[in-house]
Length: 580
Image (tube, rainbow, N blue to C red):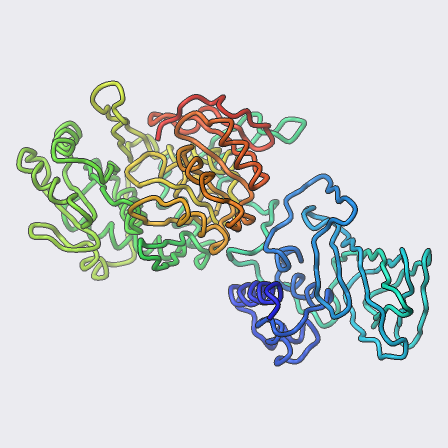
């Protein structure tokens, strides 16, 4: 079976299923029987351009997404040299080369078509699609049927017609016919195409860049004459709180929209919607409140990349407690230092490895720690978070008296010049990461963003929750134990990850692999932070992907301070050394 047929069929099937469109509806849209439509999905039947065109129109995506899995990303022009173009071998005897498949928002579909000669008396398959079509013969002879009328075109001839009328063509004579075909787009659908589907969150949906996003309620962007960010103005209520004003708002606005696609160390998938995050964080808040955790209490989180981190962090925000993320690599003496200096009241940690054992050893010297909670397992002396959570209500009323200036986060800096220092952030800290996500990482509200970071580091809050959800983008989290470049590289195509951020060390491991073995075409924007970027790494990644990696710099005490923002030309190595 033709591999390209199978791949296109799989994309059609997955998109239809994600959009919850029935086979019967797609058969009607494409003008074929349900049985024949399913043959297109399983890759056993060639799909004509018209069939693909109708599918793409119904899905609200570009035809290039179906044919190659690559979304258009050029905004000004696309140059195609002789013999180039995106190949579409979708109809027996006809080879198409799309000449502008990567140009966004185009109003035409330009093709060079090569048709092999057929019996001039053979019946001509007819089809319809919205818009007009222009065909210009470059060489050979083409027989065109329009309704009941037949025309024969030779080199230099052209024909323009309303393609909503039945039409079709075959090459005749002794040589291949090559012709230029330009199909215009239109806002009007053909009669067989139903109303566009209600816009819902899916991984492969074409993004609408001009729709209002939640972050715009809290920040106004001021652009220069070139459309680049010049300044910002923040505006937020006195009691701004990410859990209530972002998570709950998104749960109300689009409850079934994907918030996080989580992958366990063994590749178990879990999909969490904004409604899931809102409800589970309320359950966790009720649970913590029942244990006596209240406003201002400091709670250490040692949770690796476990999905419970997202429930727990927002639960602490709801209560007004202070979350203290910490690395899973801490030893007993590291816990002692942090417990004592931060007056930690509760610790919530993973059952993995020796984390709890090291914490227990430290707690003997730290009487401030009153509560021990474990996720993904149980241990003597520790409460079981996963067992307790379902027993609590998914509603947690917003408390009175919270202020945007209250502390909600505390980090311990990396300690590169002495002991780690405590860094506190207020409830406005997430708003500072709007620029991080929107203008540096360039997240797509209908895409999937992947930042590689353990939740114990500040970088996790740069790239795995705050700015991304304010911009309504879903996040991808892989809860791996050890980093393996090949393991990570396989995930981009499988999960259609659209934006990516990682430290330079990981990029260096990536380029040591044979990048030609991996499909990285889903990535539309790549960012880097953690240390200065080596120009060789920059160039090799660019050679493999066509993407210029955008550097960023910030500190534990800040959000993004310097960066290659959207519209800038990056200069590798110019950003210095950001924090991990």
